[in-house]
Image 1 (cartoon, helix red, strand yellow):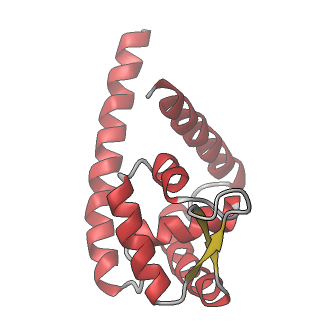
Image 2: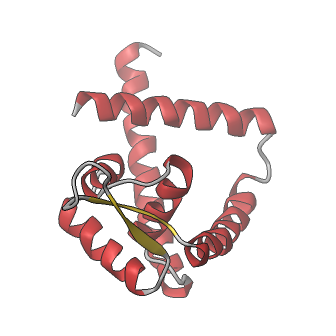
Length: 145
């Protein structure tokens, strides 16, 4: 298989993955306590620490209005809190509350159960390899935009 053929196969598999994720996400959203964007915001704040709306939107490839809307909802639900900037009183960042951490923990557990059923035939090394390649793909995609 040459380089172009390999890219065609990759493109097809990525397309199938995106399609499958959209389908599964719509099914999951019906039973989840968190919308997908809200889950990603909580997850990113958990991994990276406090962030502003612009930073969140850049990391998540979402427009600022979507992040602002989801953040407002998460604020009302006491899952995140605003932290004032030390250098600019008009600016602020969001961070997780205790309730946000607990909600994320529950949501993550449910999602990991689903991933376990999908990947239960994979070895630990296969999961690590797939994760490494996805990270590299996402990182390079982000740099090119």
